[in-house]
Image (cartoon, rainbow, N blue to C red; front, side, top):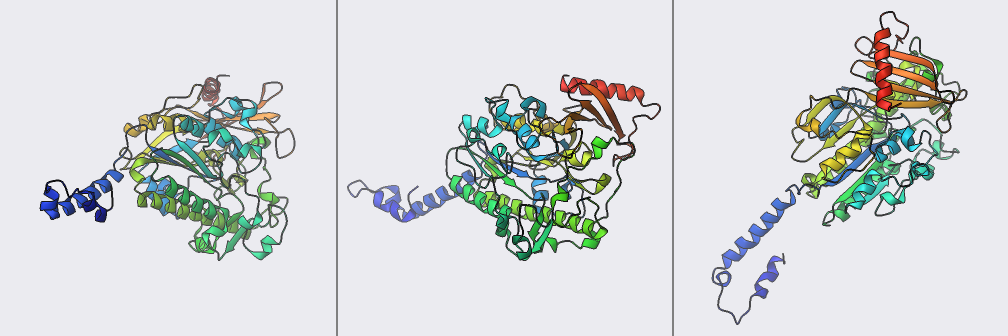
Length: 505
C-alpha cells in the first residue's frame, strides 16, 4: 500500500469527481481500515505447511525448570513458553553426550543406525545420503539458517552444509574470550580453565549472548519474506564451564540451593555404569581424582543454576522479538535439551551414563492455535520423535527410514501413551574413561512406566556382561540395583524381551 500522503496524487484530474474526491473523509477511513486490516493479518496463522520454525537447542539442560515443578530454578521465560506448549514430562535422549544425541535427533535415527557414538564421527560417513531435519525443510522450500551449537560444537561433526540455506554462524567457537571474561581465566591456557566464573559483564560478553544477538538479526531479516523459515538457535550453556554474568548468579542465595540428593553411587551397580567420563576433572580448579569439597560442590551447583537463568533470559529475548515482529502466530517454537546432567547425584557429575538424570530432557513444542492453553503429557517419548513431529505439524511429506514416532496425537489426547518404552545407550571401553567409536561394551537402557532396565553387552562377543534394574515406584533416585532380588525374575525376563523388540535385535 502506498503511503497515505501519496494517495491523492494517483487520481486523474481528467476523470469525473470520484467519491473519494467528493468525500475526502472516506479516504482517511479507507487508509485507516487498510492499516488495521494489515495489522490483523499480521497475526493470522498461516495455512498448514507455511509455519515458520524456531528451533531452540540448549546444551546440558536437565528438566529442572519452573514449568517442570522445580521451585528453586528461576526460568520465567521458558515457563511462559511452556504455558502455550505441549510439555513432554518424560522425554529421553538416545545417548547422553552432545554429538551422538544431536545427530541422532537431527537424522531421526538411533546412534547404532547412523554409526555415531563419540564426538569425532560424522554421521555422513555411514549414511552419506541421509536427509536431516533442517535439510528436509530446505528441500520443501524453507530457508534454513543456523546460529550457535546445533550439530556439535567443534570439528567435522559440527558442520553439515546440505542442511542449511546459508552458512551457519558461531557453530565452532574456540576463542577463550567468548568463554571467559575475568583476567585470571583469560591469562590461562587451553579451553578448560576455571569450572565457574561470575563476572560483572553484559550478556554479549559470552558466546550465548552473541548467538542471541545474531539470531535476533536473522529474525529481523526474515520477517517480511514470503518464504517460510527454519531458524535453529543453539545455546551452549549450561554446559561447563559455568560462566555467566554476575546478575544471574545474584538471583540465587547459595544457601537456598538444595544439597545433593543421593550423593553416593547406586548399590550393586556395575563399574561401567558409574565410571566418570572425566569431563569436570579437566578444569584447573577441580582435583584430578574428582573429589570435591562441599564448598566446591555448592559453587558448581550455584553456577549451573546461574547459567540456566542466563539462557532463560536469552530465550525470553527471542520470544519477545517474535511477538514484536508479529511472527508468534506464524511460528512453531520447539525448545529441547540434548541430554540431562548430573550435579553430584549418584556420585556422578556431568553426563555420559545411562541413568535417569543424564537421559531425561526438557522438550516443549508450541503450535499456534493448538497448544495455546498449554498441554502436559506424561507419555514416554524420545528425541527421535521430534523429526516426524515437526514434519507433521508443518504438513511436509515424511522421510523414509525414520525411527521415531509423531507426537501429534498427544495434542488432542495428552493422556495417550505413544510408546510403552524408550531406549538410551552409552558405550564404554574395557579400560579408560573415554571410548572411541562404539567402544568395547555397549550399555542399553530401557525406560518403561515404572522401571529402568540396563544391559551391558560385549560388542565383539555379543554376550551379556551385566544388568541393572531400578524400580521408580520405590526408588526414583535409582540407588539400588534390584537385579538379584527374589521375585523380580519374571519382570526382568519381560524387560529383556521388550528391549530386544524395541531395538529389533
